[in-house]
Length: 160
Length: 282
Image (cartoon, rainbow over all chains, first blue to last red; front, side, top):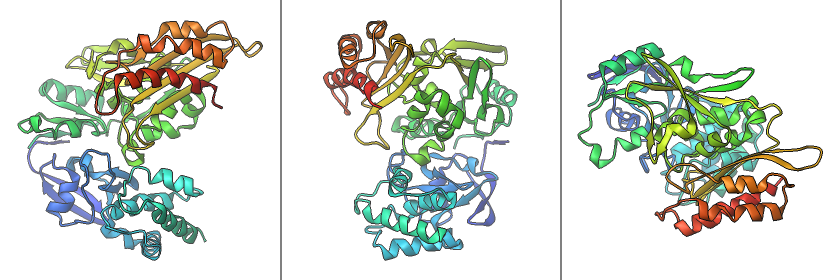
């Protein structure tokens, strides 16, 4: 497959099959935010050091600032805009609200997407495991405690 | 706009490389895409050849005498692979320190090798394991020891028409008795190493005497640094605090660190030596 001009790139976005025509080297964060108006995903550092741009690709957390659009071909993409499409996602959003895990909100979409992949893995979770899973997502407001509280509570709700 | 190619076989990738000699190989993209956003790359429109969909580069193959890790195997997969965790924990521990979890789902071992950063997290582990790299081109395959392949800071012996296909790690029988990887950074996740150390030791189970020792440090020189006198100092005696202190004395004189934004050369010399004491940790 070669793309040397604007290319049609088919992929699944939040459970909806879609196709976008864009430069194949456009960053996925720019495709989402500027071309598609999906501004839930944030750009912090643009170099893979803050995690704010985390999306799920085939269910796995990845950094959308370090991916080009061509990589989306045929993949299943999930962004925070689709998080309430699943029971785990709704549980997670509720837990973030109830525990006051959101302050400025900039890291929240990526925190929730990373936590969503964790909840779906159905791994046994203690606070240490949650902290390790979220270790690539920086938050400069909360000190993380309430975020970990929220994910711990959501994990308990999902498994009960 | 740059062209992007997504070949589905190594053969197709090599044909593309011949057709586009100035193209850039991209594995996980976590180094390449950062470099291409540098202001000095604004005019850069070299095509990208994506390697992520080449099945043969995404395999971990275990043979009788060696383990072959495809160049596009991610650090996330390496860190959680049960066989690698049992047999070469020095590498899986190193893999688990790369960036953060999402980055590890993208970043590959072949990319880490080809970026050839003095701080590349996997590199000291590959040195002590006597790893080699397998390079393929239209004209055939060649194998180089990792220490020959990495020729300087951000420099490798990769020829323009070659692709790094796999990392080959010899299997030891009996296995190394002790394997350890240690990394010092500002925080545990998302930190570039100020200093790192990989160590593998063979210790006689009957008498506790060290019979063989490989030690290597990252971020303490232009490429990975070995310290043969420190290795020799450990051999022929039990692994005690006294033996480690004696061996560690050679390290500061032997390594070539620099001052940079993360640490001073002086600190790196001291902490590099001190990391040896962690071989006593359980």
